Image 1 (cartoon, rainbow, N blue to C red):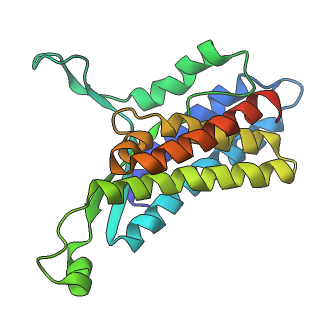
Image 2 (image 1 turned 135 degrees about the horizontal axis):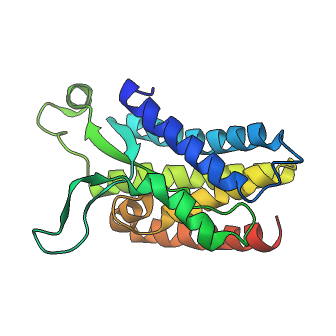
Length: 214
């Protein structure tokens, strides 16, 4: 379900986030934690990605993952980058400088998605001219599914005794729920404010557990 174009940015983000998380761990005496950290980060991100891809498929659309990039740095027409700046690749490392006191907390919302309808299949099911675009509500549902699966996995990880895996799921859900440009939270916020409010409340509770309990 992953295209060749998606594999490199996903692997790059896994490596960057794993390295950033490892800065909070004692890798000198416990070098085996490196493999465990990479595995945990991979499972957290891939679960989020594939869940959204499945939901997109059910909504007769498909998504393509990419690194979160900024094209502008101001509101004026001239205030734009010559090339999109891949902020998603830098935020995990930058955030570690600020969030260092917290348990393995780093910025994890480094991947965003573009969506397009599968017109031909949609036309077959709904009629040729009745299904040609994705609504904000559809975008919100796709994005929300990623938040939900990470919260579910956080609970499972906690009860199975994998605190790092549990925390990483909560961190990804927390940063993704923020209503910032192109992030999942922005898509959910404008797609369905009620769903966003409900998920934001759950994520906030999860964050309190991740910081003080897990």
